[in-house]
Length: 227
Image (cartoon, rainbow, N blue to C red; front, side):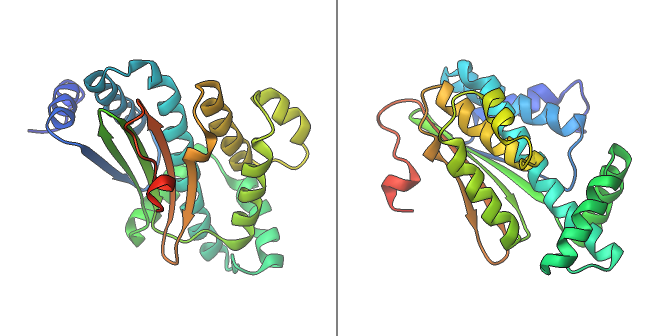
């Protein structure tokens, strides 16, 4: 059966009810994908009786997916303009051009280019009564300079409980991704969740952002598993 807007909720509901993992993959972010993500999260949390987390988890997953897609598209953009993304000088030049050029139409164009090159973002939802976790993976490694900045933002965000306060204190040196990381950690704090349950794992061929949401004391985090 074709995934039309009319039958999509029923298909998602059936899929979530019969599994403990749901995945989706894309090379771009658009309204249809956002709707699909929200449907999956909503159905998972209804199934587990944890609807109060819907808005928080959706906001976080959307932010992570946007960051991951943009990181992938940035790589293709650098290739197109003939700059080495791993060279600090060329990176500084290219990132200015990328920000100046970025638009909705460009995101569509580079989403298609990523798809052609097999570059994508995969969102995996794992869920059980004790808790759930979501992994947003892009199949490209993080750039070292960006990883350093990202780790610095994660450390700094631990000091804040209000996103507006973080923005005002860091408005001169916070890029979109840095603000997004702070938003995620502050949202978790506001739900009395340990922000250390948000992790970014870097590997030679991929980057994984993971958010864990315990529902009760039976949940065992990756950190407690030693993973």
